[in-house]
Image (cartoon, helix red, strand yellow):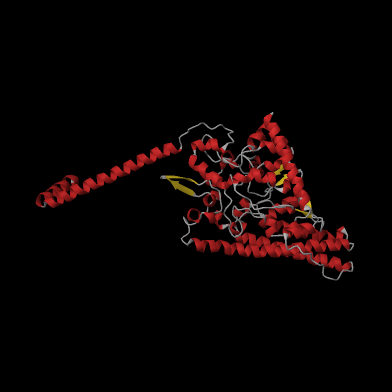
Amino acid sequence: MKLELSLKKLAELVEEKPIYGWVLFGATMFATFLLGLFASSVMERRVESRAMFQVVAPIDEMETRSDVWGRNYPREYERWKMTKRSDFKSKYAGSAVRDSLAEHPAMVVLWAGYAFSREYNQSRGHMHAVEDVKKILRTNVPQPGTCWTCKSTQVVPTMRKMGLEKFYGGKWEDLYGTFKESIGCLDCHDPKTMDLQVKRPALVEAFNRRGKDIRKATHQELRSLVCAQCHVEYYFKDKKYLTFPWDKGLTVEDMEKYYDEVKHVDYVNPLSKAKMLKAQHPDWELAQMGIHFQRGLGCADCHMPYRAEGGVKFTDHWVQSPLNNMQAACMVCHNESADTLRKNVQDRQDRIQELRAQAEDALVRAHLEARAAWKAGATEGEMASALLDIRHSQWRWDFVSASIGGGFHAPLECARILGSSINLAQEARLKIARVLVAHGVTDEVPMPDISTKAKAQAFIGLDMEKLRAEKDAQIKRLEKAAKSASYD
């Protein structure tokens, strides 16, 4: 009834003033035009969506070649290939080649007795993973097959073929010719559904030991967990089995307690004779303690932000520093300018680097003063407490130093950890000073010139020319063997 009255009044109005009829006609035509555009846009997007996810070629369950995946997902594949670029260098990191030992020569002394003192470089993009692990001087030292775990899409199929125990228990050299494909699509995705999946057993096992089922992880959680397959702290249990030391928790103290209880030792520093731990790259663990994770963000949100091409929105597979992609990685949430945000990042990193340098200096002095104490006739009983402090101090320093971006991911936690490291190193020095005095040494222990990597390596007795020659010979031998195996 009300509709009929309204229409009747409208008809009367039009009859009295014809101009209203033209206005109504125009409005109706404009609305029809807009609806037509909307419908056309929806249909166009549906066609684009179908084209985007159209399966050009079926992907095998264990397809290791990312270019095969790229036939179906060309946008993602083309961006993934960008990880080959090594031309971005931020103040402290980036994808460029950086010699970390040259930038921090003190690390050579801290890692004396361990292969990291030979060579330690800033990580490059994913496409370089296989190439870099082959060339690094650390793999001229006998290593287990476990070292290949995070380097190639071919790892998981090889694990299934060989069996996990045999894969971990084999020699790094024996698997040299096996891996040609670098980190890629299979490492994170189900080939049929493209769902994110955790493929490597160590992460699943670590969750299981903590009473958690990783299969119940949400999609947003998986946008970080696929990274946590590799970007974490780990060790080789029984010198071979890849294990994440999370049984007691994810903090630096939790993992330290775990390592102390299982009596794990990565190496013994020959200067101090301290039984040392070597942190790997606890990126996922430290990120848990930062503000971005606490606000619900994950690794992919900043390192693989969404991108639009031709009206299609997709995840950018050029995994890189957000500082090289700030418009997409940072400024979708932050209103500040890129310069302001970059300064915010660097201010935090600067503070962490200041603390890191203090920890390194104190630790170098602790190692060398311990060496002096041994030379003076110190006993194991006299040195035990100080050496434990050195172990715990350097573990904390290394936990922060080895992390990629930890100074930004969790600056407060990193500052806390480094403060604890400095305190423990100074406690060790005080204890050693008492031992030195007890053995008649009252003069200050002289510090050597370790201002460059070359000087530091010479000081700890490394013949770098010989080591490089041995590495070159190893690569030639292994490449020749790999070609022969391929030919056969």
